[in-house]
Structures are given as C-alpha cells and as structure tokens.
Figure 1 (spheres, helix red, strand yellow):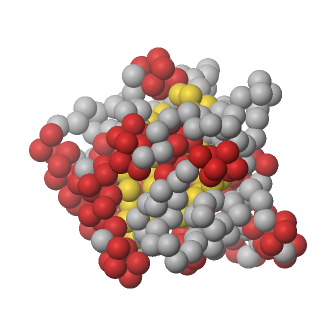
Figure 2: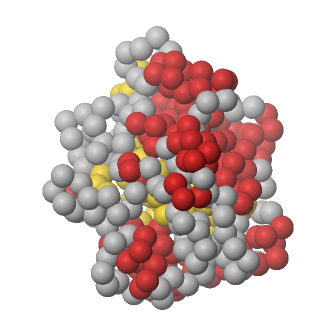
Length: 337
C-alpha cells in the first residue's frame, strides 16, 4: 500500500518489452480465451477482496519512503471501444511519472487503477487495485480485464466506483492532513443509476452504506476527492451531452474535454500540476510535456484540454508544493527533481 518507488529502469526492462512483443494485458487475453464463464476481475483488482485484516478496503498510507502520500485513482471505462484507453496509458506511464515526479508536481503519489462498466449487463462492472507507489502500478494496469461490454441503456455505472471511493477508501492524506485525493475518471457516456442489488453483488455490502442517488453521490464524493472527469469527445458523448452532464454534477472546473484519447496520460499529469500549483502557464506546460517525451501532436492536444483549467487556476490562485526524490533515470539511482 504505497511502499517502494517508481523506477523507469524497471519499466523499460519489463513493460516496454511486453508492449513491443504484444504480450501486455495478459490477464485480459487469457480470461477471454477461457470464455465468458471465466469472466472475473483479477484477484488484485476484485472490489470484494478482503485484506489480511478482513476489511474490504483500499488504503493510501504514509510510510518512511513516502511520508506525505497523495492518493490518485485513475478510473477507466472498460466498455466497448473505450477498452483501448488503458493500453494507451500503459505505453505512457513512464512519461506520466516523469511529470509527477521529476517535475515535482505532487508529493509522494500513490496510484490506484480502476475500471468500470455497466452493472446492468456486464459480468465485471468494477475493478480497483490497492494504492501503489512503484512499478506495481503497471502490474495492476496489466491485470485489468477489459470486458468491452456495456448495453443500450444510455450510460454506464461509473457511480459504482463513486460508491466504493465513498465507503471503502482510507487515506492518510485526508485523515492526517485534511487533503483530498484525486479521482481521474475517463468517460464518454453519462452515469446511470445503481441499486442495492448491484452493491451486494459486485462490492459485497449486504446493504448500501450510503446513498445511491447519483447527484447526492457526486456531491458526497467531492467531500474527500478532487474529481476530474476526462470526457472523450466521441459520438456517444455528443449524443448524450456528456460534457454538460458532468459539469452539472461536479462543476465546470472539474470537466476536461479530450479530443484525442492518446493524450490521457499527459492530461492527467498536467491537471495534477495545475491543481497543485506547479503549472500556471501554457508555455510551462508545453515545456514540461516535451521534457517528458511527448510528441508534438500529443503536446498540442493535451494543451487544448487543460487550457481552461490553467486559466481558472490563475484566476483563483493555487499554492505551490514541494519536490521529492525518485529513481527516474534509465541508469538507476535517485534523481533530484
């Protein structure tokens, strides 16, 4: 739960080679080969999994290596064509950590990987990992099951993830420092309602521990989480007016329109930089993206997504944070940020 540190060396040695060989996301491939009867979340991402203390809980805790943990949840839509987005983020995970750590955007990030679908028709509508600070983040990405389901009911049940964050999360950032964590939710369709049966079947709570009303859940979620919705501006999003729906739920400042899903990692990194007060101009954002290895097209598209957020941050004022040390070199060892 947040020990050890990210290593670019390990990422290059382990993950980049898998991507090049086409062998990443092995759990998804093996599960689909076994047939629909085998469809299930990997045990490390099963929301009904109990830890050694018999608690259905995900925790972001401080430790000697990371004394000021910052919890970050990245929630992917695993339905239909959206299932390709986690694979894109995996390819750019090194660049994302370059932004967060080498540029000192945030102290001691601990990342939980999640995926959601549609509880009304999917077998695996929610997956969520423990929080990690090292290359186990990539392992959790690799263990996602990309069901590719979803139905014709005009939305997905991302609120199943919201419920889990409200009731099954514990973070030292909030408990010790009254600091919110970050939820980045990648979405194209609007949320549809969940019910007590969904909660019992997919999370394991005999009875709901909090409200299941969508609007009330969105408000409750924001009490402890800085919510950022990355709306993929595809046909479904346009037809359902998804951008406006999420603005109504979370506020305009919490919704970023993403024209190019290939830039999800860049947009997440910059959004954290802006909210932590480490990025306050588009020129700086552009320079940081180039330094992290993003190509010209990705830089252009990512800047377009965060332009409004930077303007809002400048208008409201944001306090800058400190930096930290981490192994980001390709030679091993720690790098000064």
